[in-house]
Image (cartoon, rainbow, N blue to C red; front, side, top):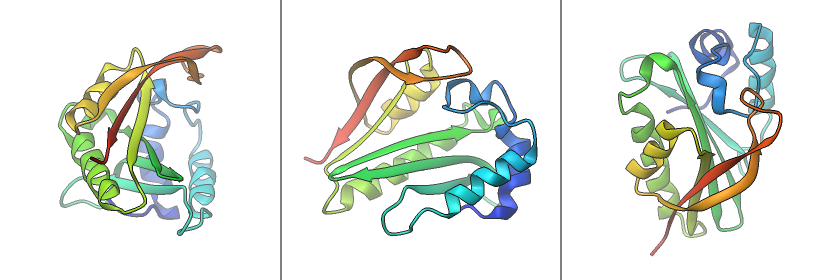
Length: 165
C-alpha cells in the first residue's frame, strides 16, 4: 500500500473506477471519463495528513500500478474503513491482506479502540474480507447507506468490528 498520486488517475480509471461490477456497492457512480477520477484524486490529496481522512492505493507485489484503494477515517477512538478492488484481482486474497495489515496497525495505536466497517447485505465478498481479518458481525444497520448503482433508496448493511481487548 502507498499514498495515491495524481499520476494514478489513468490506471485507477482503467482498473476499476469505470467498471459497473466493481462500483456496484460503492457510494459513487462509475466514472465515464478519466478527468472524474483525476478530480477525485485531487480531492483525496487535499486531505490533511494528520487528521485524515486517509487513502492508500493498493498495488500487487512487484508493481506500482493501482489495483484498489482503502479509505479510512478516525472519529475519536473509532477507526472506520472502506475499500475497492479491481475485478481481475477478486478472490485472490489481496483485499484481506491489505485490510488485515491496516486493522492490525490501527489496533496497535493507543487512541484507537475500535476498527469497524460496513457492507451491503448483498455484498458477500466484502463481508468475507471483514470476517477473514477477524472482524465480527455486530448486526444489521437498517436503511443505512445509499448505493446509487443498486437503488435510489438507502440499503441495509451489515456492520463489522474488531475491538481492542
